[in-house]
Length: 423
Image 1 (cartoon, helix red, strand yellow):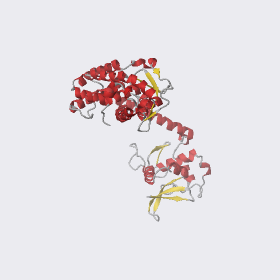
Image 2: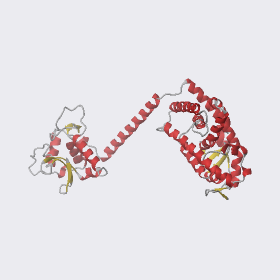
Image 3: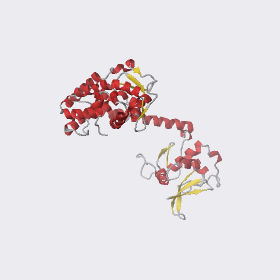
Image 4: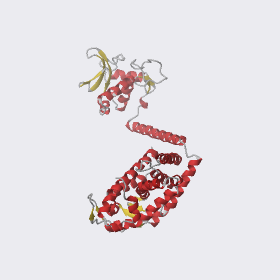
């Protein structure tokens, strides 16, 4: 099987056999060729082969012939059992109103079969009509577009129904998991400044603060010392709330003090960043820090965080579509807290099992919530990776801040948590 282009007929011919022997399987007019111009040669061959071979429905008998040309039929088309070739010929003829221009060299007496069907368009069309093919069933462009749109809408509807059915079949939290979820949610609410009232109670950092960086850092960014000073005023209570959250978790309290300290130092910036990110306000383009201070991207950047500011703001924008509730934020925090890959831990297995318990309860809770976002669970887990990256970037950034900013501006707890972290 091969193709060649006929300039005289302006068609692409699909030929079976050799160049000298064989027969014409199908010819494609320019409009059909243009529909296939984006296909590769292999996929074009595959497409055309399928057009010839076609899908054979179960209601057809084996090798049932086309009532027009006798070729192998592929289905019921325009009220007649025909092959793909005659179906396409009839459709194109009606859609483009070509039949008035058809003529026959032999006074309309041609015999139409598999070999001769492409030699006389008039006789082929007359036979299509004679065997009962219905012109009124051929859709014009507008009806064809409407039909395609309806098919697409029905496909989308089926997808949604299948997604709902899949969600309904996914496991939801067990009794013990609900108790764990309740405990985590309460721990978060008791340690989350301003709770759900943060928008009403926030105060915007004056715009003149953080807009004029003055002290250059060794990595090329600059620090506005006035903004840095403002941020250090809220950092101690923010860190304290993260510590209080961790202490309310029984599994955390059962660990040795050394492991607790390592876990807290490792996750502190990650959890504070998460708490800020879920309080991103697209209208004012601000993050609310520690539930009270609303800041813009440049203010946070110039106030000491540099590129870390961009990462937190970008996270806030992406999390907005997730519409996370308090429980989901609490579970994210618990997963970040119990990360068994922190350097220096001794009870790695216990911490890893604890995180697995949180993750399983988390996944089951996501199933219970039935979010409409496709692949919600894996997408949300990717945010854990983003937060870990923010923590790592901040550890590096902290070294620059410590060198460039006056030591007296750093609160003791801030230094205690972020000093000696691995970069």
